Structure formats: structure tokens, C-alpha cells
View 1 (spheres, rainbow, N blue to C red):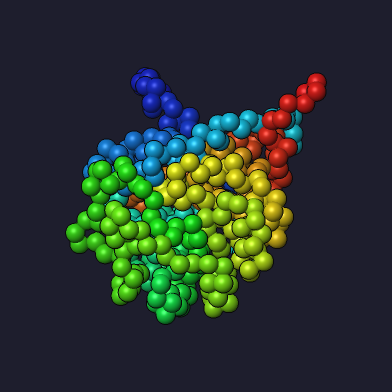
View 2: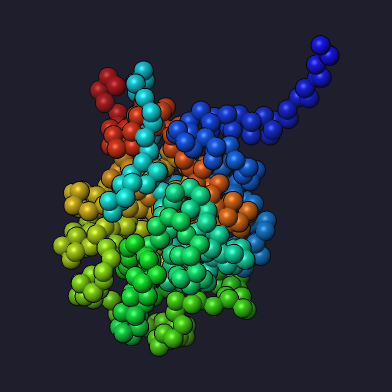
Length: 393
């Protein structure tokens, strides 16, 4: 038998990658081991994906994707308030087969993370929304396509193998809005997400200072033919879009698909949304991009969830960067969460593969978090997993 060849030592980075791969295999649900072991970008965290994206994007595009409104306090708080929540760990629990699935609109999803609507994906990668749809398909993810997409919904649906929802900005021209809803329905959108928190754009100072504009050659196909001019006409005049509760009720009655309201922070608005017929609410502060010094969404979530009281699903976005963040959101009342910037960073870093890799990172971290908390099923997560000092505890 020939002598064995010496194995060269792994450097630290290679060791971490190998350990992560073994951990992913160990934590992967049955049937997903092959996907977990498939080639993926050399990114271990969502923050690393942002750094990789920043190195590839031009300065104006990065400012547009990453920036927020005003002094960006809400943008920071979305991330920081997760760090204020601590876990209560239980040990020696029977974990069995970890289950991180969730059911939305009667459809079982493999994990509680959707892709939030983000505009102009082709500024991050030439394939833009098509690459996002394919990355969503590779990971069983529902993709919420933005009205401001740089690819038509018809083309996205042809690339999609998982459900696509459509995010809607109601236009002043109601007939245009009705036509857009019917177009989304005809293309196969499973639900509508009506954005209700943006009567005007926010003061996105960082993006404006960087001089961001939609690059030449890119268009917004879903808004071609809209009659309403840009809502901000001069520095002295801001004309808000007019959207009130009776318009929401009208849209819900008109739509042939379930309608979620995106941009809910106040419990009274959440209750009103349910009474108006919404299929669900999305706790969102627009990713900190519109009104600065709003509370972080994880701060607003518990009161909204209490007001909804299980009548419809409550989703939330803003600040999700770790699997532990997902657990904290579910503990505070969310049925599922949405991510926006992270998948765009994955898109910029490595296209379709980068988008899928972001979800795989979160899936692995979520399974790790549940196992370490002693909770075998996502459905068993409640506020009891959060640390609240008890006498003698």
C-alpha cells in the first residue's frame, strides 16, 4: 500500500468554510442536503454580502440601495433594536426533526422568509428581477415583485418557479391602477401587497447627494403610460398621492387576489386593515427610507400583533440580518418576515447564486437558533423564548 500523501493544513478561512458546510449538512432538513452542499459564493454572513456588493456597485447605486431617509436613525434602529432582545435558552429538549416551515395563504413554505419588494433590481445585476426570481425558486421563496421593477411581471413569472406576489402603488389614475391589478392577476400573481405608507417619497439625502438616477437604458415597465407626474415637483412643493381607507376598501373589493397592507406600524391601523378586509398586514417603516425617527419595526410589531389577534397573518420587514432575528420577530408576533437589501447584496455579489445563498445562510442560522434554544418547531416559538428576568430565574 503506497504511503499516504500529507494533507496540507487549512488556513483559517478554508477551515471556517469547511466547518460551515458540515454544519449545514448536519442541520439540513431531509431532501435539502444536496442544495446545502452545492457551490455557493464565499460569503458567510449577510454583512459580508453587503461588503461584497459595495465593492461591485458604483457609489450612486450603492447609496440608493443601502441608504435611508434623513439622518438614517430609523435605518439604524431597525438593526440595533434586534440586539436589545435577549434569549431565554432551554436545554435537554427533544428536538426531533427541526421544522422551520410556515403556511401562508394555504401554501406551506419551507422557511418564514419572503423577498420584499425592491425597485430597480437591474442596477445591482444585469439580470435583475429575473435572477431574483430564479434565486427564489432555488430556495422555495415567495418573491414580492415591486411596481418599480425594471422587468415586467410577465417576464418575471416566466422565470419563476415559486409564488410571486405583486406590490402595488395606487396611482391617481384609478383606471390605470385597475388595469395594473388585472395585469398582475393575469400574469399569475398570488397576492397583492398594497403599500400604504408612502404618500410622498422620503428625504433620501445620501442617495440624492450621490446623484443616483435610473441608469440609461433601464425602464419601469409596470408604470409605462401612467398619467401622474412625479409627486415631488420642486423643493418648495410636495404633492402627496391621495390614498385613504375607502380607496383600500375599493381595491380589496376589486381585486381577485388576497390583499396585504404594507406599511402598518400603529395597532389601530392594523385593526382597521383587518376590518377593511385585508388578508394580512406587513409591519414596515419602508426600510427606514421614508420618514426618519419612526420606531424600529421590531418595536412596533408586538402591539400590532396583539391588535390583529390572529385574525390574519402579520408579516414584518426591516433589519433582518441573522437567523436569530427571525426567531425574535416570530416571538414578537410575526408569522413570517421579509428581507430586501440582503438579497440585493447577494444579487450584486453573485447574481442568482448570490440571491439563493442569502436564503441558505438564513435557513442554516434559523435552524441553529431553534436547536440551541431547545425549540423543535417554529410554530412553538412565542414570547417565552425572550429573556425577561424572573425572581430566582
